[in-house]
Image (cartoon, rainbow, N blue to C red; front, side, top):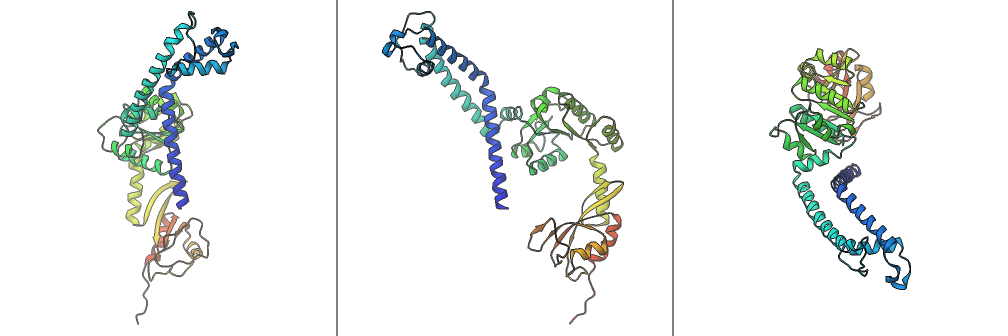
Amino acid sequence: MENKANYNSAGKKSLKILLLVRVLVREFSGFLFCLTVAFSTSVILFYNYYPHQLLPGGTAMTFSQAAYYALLMIFFESPLQYVEDIKLSPLFFLLPILGLVTIAEGVVHLGNLLFQHKRYSKEWQKMIAETMEGHVIVCGLGNVGVRVVQHLKRFSESVVAIESNPDARFVGEVAGYEVPVLFGDVRDGKILEQASVARAKAIIAVTDNDLANLEAAMTARELNPKIRVVIRMFDQKLAKKVEKFMGIEGAYSSSARSARLFAQAAISGNIIDSFEFGGTIINALQLVVEPDTIIVGQSLDYLRNNYEVTVLCHESSEGVADWNPAPSTPLVVGDKLLIMTDRDGLNRLAPVSNKLALPRD
């Protein structure tokens, strides 16, 4: 577990460094291009036109010498004798100026970027978002959106969030996860482009406006035909139609999904989650082995065979989880089981929690 934590920490640091490098390359790309062109032009001019007789030994200048001399002149050195030649004389004045501009621009711009990075400013978040790829875009930072971001970060996914209200309740919390947050209308193609939708692998639209979610999904699909689309819709019937006829991978009604969980939780307080599969409601529930119950001392196989349930995970009383427990694993007080079963399985498991009438000494 410690090695895994160290690996995840190293991975996060590597990702931060990669994003920083991408931003620096992107922000300095125009300046570096101009600098490269100016330097290359100077090297070519020195190589072709500088008088050989003025060089030590009177030999022809090589490309490496020309590059070396040009580099020295950029940083205020004078290795070559000045010559009155329209092709060369401007270089003796322009190269030092180029060096001065390079240093000034580099220090100021880099300092500004690092300051924005430290403050995690809106400008920095925008720059980070524009360099992302293979990430997930989350539209809307309400109660649902912030939890979606939390789960994605637990899966070590890269995330960009879009929110229309800069004063929204969870904006600060999401920024604390080092997730760039862009402010604007999720239906606006420009804001989606700033979120690098063309390189994103998925978009999740969970605002409280069905039409905004749908339009954001359609705009994203236009800009990136391969993007996976998941949207939130309050009308479950409309969600099913949208999913079927518009080629959207997932359209869900959070109220409809939570209603099922609330109803099932009223039946059994041990239910963790509930979902539908093949027309059957499947429940995920936690079963704690209590003292003086019928399963104490029995095996997992006994529980599976006698109550017809599926045991996904066994956590011992010491807190050690086993996702592939052996059938012969004995059950002791304090053990926790993650069980998948249908409605009838809940009824079959009811006697498991009943205390046995044991004789007293």
